[in-house]
Image (tube, rainbow, N blue to C red; front, side, top):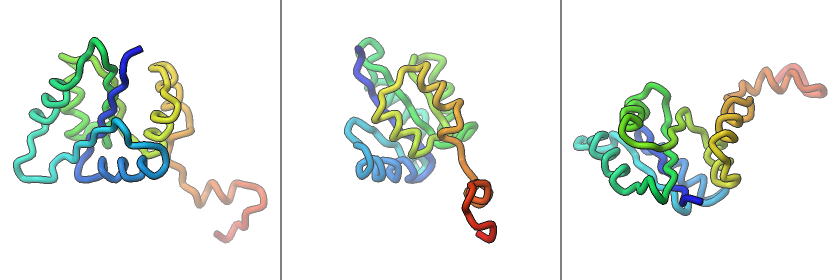
Length: 138
């Protein structure tokens, strides 16, 4: 079995926020974070190349989690898929990261989980009203 390498790359410092929460709830061991566009000299292409250069496709499975589908960070990694084999997951949430770290899912399990309702945003006001026994005047 290949070693699993986890990279979280986001706009701003969200990646470090995810890591901070992971450290408390699960673990941040082996998680690399990249806080993109936080300095004027940030270069996404160079950052991605650095990640790919440190990744050994023979012995590692690389999982990259980005924050926003269609955003510049995700699009940069989409371009990298042309030349490198790795797993790219976007619209990442803390729940997705915790589940991934704790369960070590296969590619098929990842796809099934992401297509389920388990990790989708929920508007709690309506959800709570629909639960029997909750007051309607929330």
